[in-house]
Length: 429
Image (cartoon, rainbow, N blue to C red; front, side, top):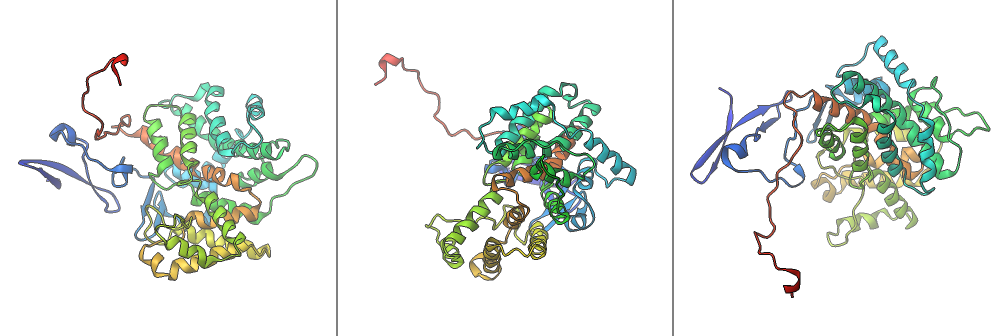
């Protein structure tokens, strides 16, 4: 007999089935709670509510484990490039050599933007935030590719997936070129995914451009580390919008908008702003540590702690090692990196941080690498979106493959006024 949980309310008892995941996670299935008892659960922010069953990413915050489709993030970073990880997340298995070559070739065929899409950039002010541009242009792609919008048509889905993976770096690079007043650079399909993005970002028509291989390697690592993180804010947004059968372009645009928030994808930008603030204040790290400890001070150290991880974020370890290697190779003495190292030492040794398990997270070192590569701060979250794209796609596809797929419709507990009598306007005091 299947194991159940019992909920006792007054004299009534409700039995709820238990579900156990492949890693031993136990969940109480409350899908019939309201129909059986008239009750709903209340969980502000859904922090303890499982919204779905997923086979894409396993995350154990207590042990600091992150795996994509069963593969540890450390293994994938050491052996794969970003495109191979995209295939793994979306299709569930690592590709054969032939599958990977066909996947790369298909993405290369879709890197260019329709010339009319390029004209959109003329309508944005030069100081427009690139995340606003990214969300707008991705949503607009649905109007240009009306031949592939049906989420229930496998061919439509396949083409939309490849188009998005191919075009997002182009859209992103063009938003940067717009901000600096330089001409747009067309993609070059003989280049790798990350190399192509860097040349669209930094090349100019009047001289040749070659990407630094170490920059390409570092960018691959960053994108892989950001590729998925189970049911986070932006991924849940993509699934929420997708549950209404909205097309993939619209769903990804919604995910980009959610990622833009400073409490989500915008955190890496906030980390660099914080490090610059400390640098400009004579590099007095201890002063800001003390400010962070003051509950009434209102100052927060960005890049520390995580809603899920109660141990060291495994992605932070990978990025920190790459950061050290890159700065050492380039003989760069970056004061922000030195401040970051001092803050890390505090977090690992100060009782205040240790007791609260406030370890450096993925945002802490990524901004320093972006700075070394030459990526401007407003583009940091755009790079996060490029990395997270295959995760969004994988979850959107998985949701549509569920046999019991339903439109998302959370319940609420109403706390407003009870029924009131209407008073005509000329009788209101």
